[in-house]
Length: 300
Image 1 (cartoon, rainbow, N blue to C red):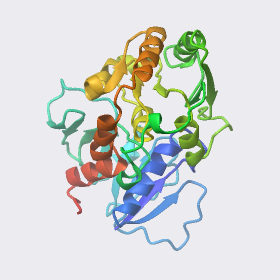
Image 2: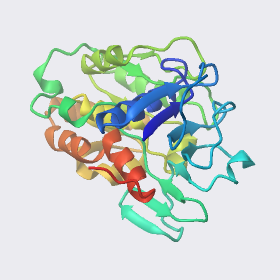
Image 3: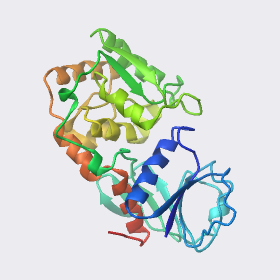
């Protein structure tokens, strides 16, 4: 079976980094994996029996075949209703819905197609690339936080108020915060390895979210990435805090969170256990295996 990631070429949009994680995971699992989009020349390509993974607004020219599997994220278009092999992804876990709780952060609800699967994103590293024997305390760090992620907007979907609150508090500790990359729809995207290098040399690596994400229970991929890169997890989301417990630093107020996290770093709060948890449960290999399991395509 071929796995087809369809849409958002790498570095063209923040969601492209999610596609990057899925692409690497499918390939690691032995799938013949391709990354295509609406501009790709697919003349002569054999799509029979493929598994497509895509997201809304980027799949206008995706092939529609009843012999193929479709894993969809934010694709409300009714054109998929006639497809029998459709699994819809949701990143917001709702314990009030009837269905199967696969684990504390994954929920599956079957329906007339292949159902709905709610699970968070993950780190872009594969398990064998995550080394818990070396953490942020083992390499030189700057008195700067290179915040890799979206910095935009002042409403409930904007991150500027949250990031600026954390930055103002950090300034009192003589630590600067510099937003880099990840501007949704913008041109300032950075290479994946560059992002890792920036995070690793940062004094701290907070995973900051807009108000809507926090209120909705969205768990960002940034928390998994930062921990897998060797950093202490820092969050103002109660949902992230519930997932990691005492392994991360939590406070709902970004300014207070900054003070708490810096104190924890000063005291060398352990990081190894959190890294091992991400390595074990929160890579895209985990996410793909769950997708394949609920679709009846489980592989070794």
